[in-house]
Length: 187
Image (cartoon, rainbow, N blue to C red; front, top):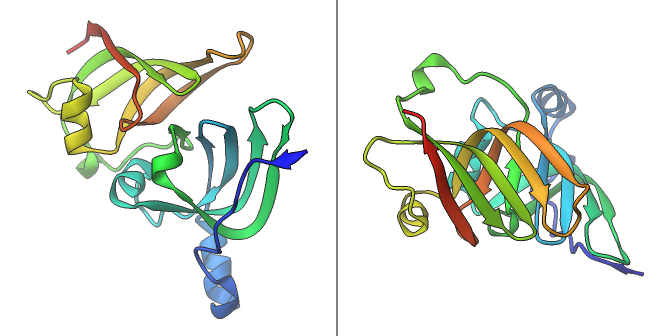
């Protein structure tokens, strides 16, 4: 069987860092689920006090530690990689970060819209939080950000009717969007 994932070179060379720095870093790692066209990737990220949405919107690669992929392609095996590796953010359809509250100073009043998104083999329904006056048009979104945060999200697969997930937050890559439909304006 073929292996679907071609891991890139280590994003961070842990051998060159001291044990103390590595121990401190491990204490600050957070679990994340990343979904691509062909797999779910589980691993740890080092947020360093930032939200995952900020990291994804400002970087072209996401460093992931101890990444493990689970293939969604029939007859293709997943893979595992110990240590650090990185994934191109353009390959990530959506991410499910760990649940935590952002500091008060990072919160900005945003309009809330319940939307439905189609991306790859997934359909996502959730609440988008956008700045007042910003349109929920894929072209406008692509010009302003890479990943759109959806809260109270529900994700289903178009290829597996039994697969579904609910998440507090889902970060959706706006570049490969196939569908974006506003269901309801909340505020």
